[in-house]
Image 1 (tube, rainbow, N blue to C red):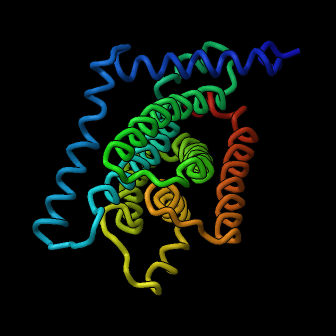
Image 2 (spheres, rainbow, N blue to C red):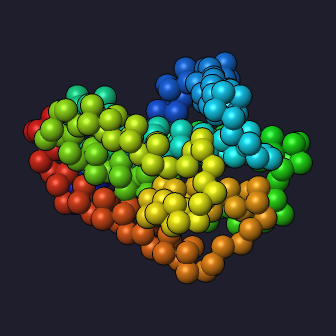
Length: 254
């Protein structure tokens, strides 16, 4: 039997590597994590300053709107990049140890889920202190899980492509810039017709749902939620399947 075939053992390895990646990312200190928060906080200040005070965006609760968007977009970006970079960071380990490549990629992305969990708790506390937290906030767990599945599925895809196309890092960085502006992170959408177009973007659907549950006290249609869940779960399942299917050739390609 292959030494890594035992599922319990694989789970333990993924958990330990994910925790190790999380600690290394923030230098195993609260101060390191605080510095990690600095970038999204700075971006929040910049976006609010530009859109609110320069471009004249009006509307109550705009700061909260941007805060929620920035927190969850930062996770999506971080998760997909972690998947993309995981193989190159641990290429030597994969060549030396018969460790499934999926474990390495999954561990890197799970480390970002730890950050997401902490950031979400902090976000809920901030919203509660501001009096902006909706009584529907517990339902936000569903779209947050959907966003995590979507980001992880895409992370498997970009990691797999990166093995064969080393320009994938630059390509994905460019794609993320386009996706950012195609997603209502920093700009509100008042046109119903435009909103319907944006709903075609699964990232936008997840963030819309998170905002509705966390701050708007709006419960969307069941069909909207069901389609979002099915699509995100489908992307995750397909990304994982394709990666596992191709992983035997990954160590040599690296």
